[in-house]
Image 1 (cartoon, each protein chain N blue to C red):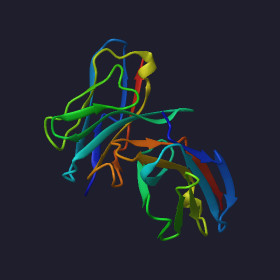
Image 2: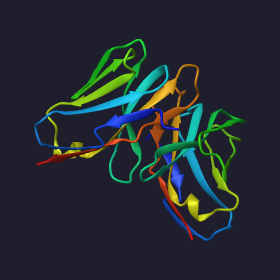
Image 3: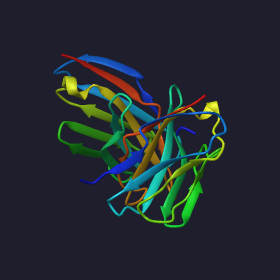
Image 4: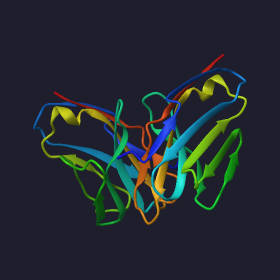
Length: 112
Length: 111
């Protein structure tokens, strides 16, 4: 089944403890992206990648890192999480930005 | 920054009625996409309309695009309770590499 898989689904962590949210897609998509969704603010793009080793900042990249060493994986790294990064995170992939995206099921992160 | 803004923010209708949601955006676009999200879950791509297209259909969905007014509408005909969800428009700017979402419309279809 064609899908984007995120892990974990739920995560509670403490301020400053580094964490990684994994994202993997099995559709051979070139384009991958991370979003965060917050009440009243909608979905905002954090980072995107147009291909292996090519990443770029979205609208809200501060406090996040990404890497794209392989086509299928696009992990989101929070080096020193803070409470304002408490959010619902989505990974998405596509053939390109001009095609529909396939979204993962989301990761609900709480930073205390 | 949000490129698209949906209207209304919330819509409540009876099963069988049609639902119309509107989206306005600010800059020239390459394409506009509509997505559905059931509560707290991942978004599902519904339909994509390119800037040189004016109307597109997919099942009970009809999307129109008016680039002169920088607006789009999503019509869901003969709505069902299962259509209850949030609907988002998203745009890709000309020569852009990002898909930018609007704030969404919450649709409730009452049985």
